[in-house]
Length: 534
Ligand code: SF4
Ligand code: SF4
Image (tube, rainbow, N blue to C red):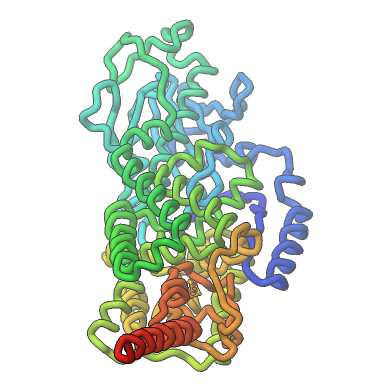
């Protein structure tokens, strides 16, 4: 649903990606965008409430006859019916412009009675990507209908049905963050308006003494916790596990040279980690990063940064924090090779297929390199579309199968399920096909790889000249025939480093080992000949 019933200024942001020409394109886009009318730099001062029409107020107050500016600083309209004032209307993003998942606030029209109870609400506009496909208008209406009749001072929490002092409402399956932001937007703005207008009159001088269905009349309330604090508390077990796993990954990376010389141990650690990523991060926590996160983050940066919006999903926040650090240290490969649930799913599937000795194929080098362009083109298209609207960008972002697989667990329309299933089946025969050619998130992350500090993937002068052992074993063909690793494409799986140190697989080491063995054998022969002579 994205019922645009009033004009909105365009939302600017830019997204960068992996090739220098493309990044130039994007920087130019950003500059252009910042100059566009309607960008934050040039936003008009008119408030959306000024454009509110009586017919919209009548959606909430059917007997509304006239609207007039209400007293006070907040942009609120007083609504008159046949018998005088019937209530107030206002827009949530005029009062508390809290960015949601898309990086833009959700615009909800709220009708508040003179008794400080919410009469009705209506979502006028949003750009929530999660809602574009898969969640219906009726789902949203069902959600906001839960606020009808709720007093503005009530502490409302999603799912807090059994929590003392709170009124619990049901969330929206697959759109938890969006629902939480809507909840906060409705209740914070209703409370702010009620406070300013002194609603209801008897509470005028005692704003913390609340007559509320959730708390009981006149009961003093402690200060309300920000939503993000509650989210972090709710998920503390998962967060401890995630932090432990990230710490383990740091240890693996810092001691990679020691680990890769123990191939059996390395393979066990790697498969164990991929299983953790797939099962815990992907299936259990649904903590799959998406290109939409990147786009939304840029929108938050340009459209009014608040930590609360970023902190509201702690797993995603921690993962992005780790990704930022790991990209600066090692490149984008650490996320793609170790922490992406869909990447892990593809890799594990391909490993099983290899074990079963099923056929596998790769495109010829020339074709392979040209197919890389697809993911960068998808990223550019996504950025371009999102300049117009997140709605369009979200539709194109459906090229990502992540939502189908992890968020909705294949419980979607056949088309999406078929697409996700096809990508997983292709991974059986062509290792990480989706990552190599189609993933706009991988394309976006690879741009930042150019800023990495360490280059710990070792190469020999013989690599590519003529040795191709590592290149043949690279799961995503990220090693040039000339031997260099293509940093933008590398997934940091460390497989080539296992080969590098293996004196049974790395030809220069095999030569050295054979020479050493021959020397040792000759020495033994000389000693035994000398002993025989004596
Ligand atoms: S390329 Fe995309 S799907 Fe593959 S591992 Fe990276 S982010 Fe995940
Ligand atoms: S084999 Fe080496 S070059 Fe290829 S993805 Fe793994 S770490 Fe990168």
